[in-house]
Length: 158
Image (cartoon, rainbow, N blue to C red):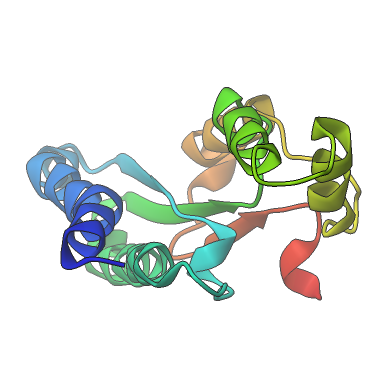
């Protein structure tokens, strides 16, 4: 890993959310209501090898979430982090295809290996993340703050 790779992961995954929070927190505080929802990762909860900058940035985002939750709680603003594992997206498909280039395994075999790491044996769908965001923004989410919510098919339980 290069210092540039480190800076890029920290910049995208930690500094950018901080700057967005900084930009909008004042108006949320004035209104007495707001929802801050950060997208972290299971790597923010469980470290993985060969991903130091990503793990550090996503772990830092969970810490930022908790600190902001404490700073904003009395103003009607909640702050939570959603921590997905592998989400079934075109990026994951590309990642599997890229890995396939250096492997003797088929696309389906590689995908099956990823899925086998998940107790539910299936990827998370983007719509499930969106549904959780809607829930956290609803009145049901009024007293949920400072949490890191895994959406990972049970991955972080093992």
